Image (cartoon, rainbow, N blue to C red; front, side, top):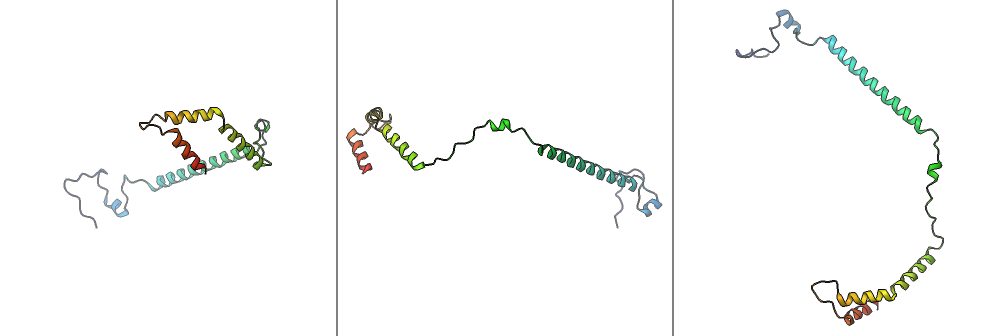
Length: 140
């Protein structure tokens, strides 16, 4: 049971419904059931139309995907190199070449210059004998 409206309350639906309308539970400004059902039916039809459109689009895309393609442009890409047959022999050759480069006179001169000048830090570079001794001890 609802309370009666306050005296200052303004009814937003306009005039009060008649006694017969109140008994039926229907007010003149309510939405008619027919219009509500029509709105629901239109919504369902639009939803089905959207699903049908999506299914048709996906079917069209799949049909395009299944067509044979010209593979000549793809074949222009060179294949990756084959695996080496003798990786250990290649590695030994590579290590020998690197060791030879490490013994190069220019590299030794650059090492000596770096030892003498240092990295340009605040601390002076250690003497060449100390560095050479540290290198010999590290190798042993």
